Amino acid sequence: MASPARPRSHWLIVVGSLLAVVVSTAAAVHQEPTASAAAHPKTAGTASPSQAATVNHSLNFGLAYGDTLYGKPQSTIDTSLDDAVSLGTKWIRVDLPWGSIEPQAGSGYDWTEFNRIASAAQSRGLKIDAILDDVPQWARESACRTDFSCAPAEDGQFADFAAAAARHYASYGMNTWEIWNEPNIDAWAPDPDPAAYEKLLAATSTALHKAESSAFVVLGGLAAVPTNASLHRISAFDFLTQVAELGGTKYVDAVGYHPYSLPTMPSASVNFQAISSSTENLESVLQRYGTPNVTIWLNETGAQVDNAYYDPTGAQTLTGQQESAQAAYATNLVHTVAANDYVSADFWYSDQDDPGNHLFFGLRRTNGTYRPAFASLKSAIAACGCNSGR
Image 1: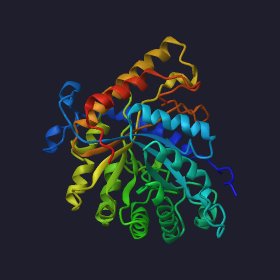
Image 2: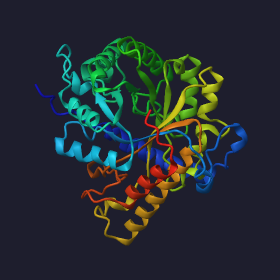
Image 3: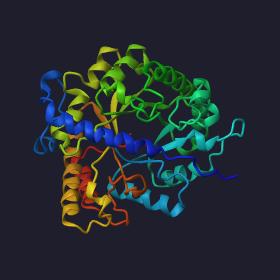
Image 4: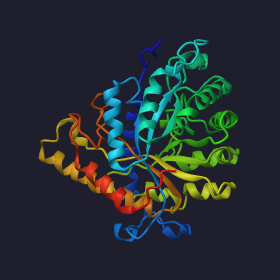
C-alpha cells in the first residue's frame, strides 16, 4: 500500500528557523566584532576569492531538498535530481520521515515513496544524506502528541527505525544518516535539550552501525542562532559543547551546521567564522573533547531572494538585483568553504522556490526558470577543483 499523505511538512519548521537565522544573522553582522582568524592555526574561513582560487580542498557538494521531493510525481523528482547532476554536485539531502514510513504503531515500514527518490538518485550516481526525523504521533510523549517537532518517547524505537532504514537501503548504496534537523532550536520540542539529544544520538548511531558497519553518522544540522531561552534557542557552539561533554561527538563522523549569512557574504560572516576561526567555534569543541577527526558538514547554505514573494517570476528590477546578489553569494560560498580545511561538505538549499512555505532560496524560480545563481554555483564548483564526492 502506498504511503498516506504526509501529515505535515518538515519545512514548516524550516520557515520559522530560517527567519530566525536571518534576523539573528543580521543582528550579529552589525553588532559583533570581526572574529580573529588567528584563533585557530588551520582556519581559512575568511579567505578572499583570489586566495581561495589556489586551494584544492576536498569537498562534497550537494543540494538540500528537505521533504520537498517526498510524495511528489516521478517527473518532479527526476527534474530536481537532474539539476543536482547538472550542477556538478554529487549529493542530495532529503528527509526520511519516520512518521510517513510507519504512521501507525505496528503497521510495518512502508518504504514505497522514499524508494522512488533513492532509486532516482542511485541511477544518477548521487549519494544521499538522509535526515532521520518526523516522529509519528504514536511514538511521542503523550503530552507532546499534537506537536510534530517532538522527540520520541523512547529512543530505542527511533533507533529501531534507523536500523531498519540502514538495512533496507544498503542495496541502494545509502550509508549516510543525519540524526534530526536543527535540534538546537524549536525543531526539537518543547525545548532544545542537549542531554536528551545526546541519548538519542548515541542509541541511533549504535543501532545504525550494528545494522551497517560502514554507516556514516551526521549530528543533525545546527542552526546558526544565538542562545535565547525565551525563544527556545541554544547556539550551535553551546549546544555542541553540551553534547560533546556527554560524549555525543564520539558517535558521529560529522557535525551538521547551517551558517546562513545574507546580507553578508560567507567570507566576511560571523556565522562562517564560527566554524573554526572565532573565539567560540565548532572545531574547537571537537578538538577539546577528543574528536578531532569529526568534520563539519554545511548541510544547509544559501541565500533567499526576498522580493520573489511579490515577484515570483523575477520580472522586477529589485528582484533582479537580489538575484544577482544571490549569484555572487553562491560564488563566494564555494570559495569560502574550499578555503577551510575543516569543512568537508556543503549543500545548497534549495533547488526550487517553495512559495507555499514562503521560501525563495531556489536556484530555480517558482515557474521553474533558472536564476543566475544556478550558473554561478555550477561554475564555482567546477573551478575550485575540490569536488570529491566521498
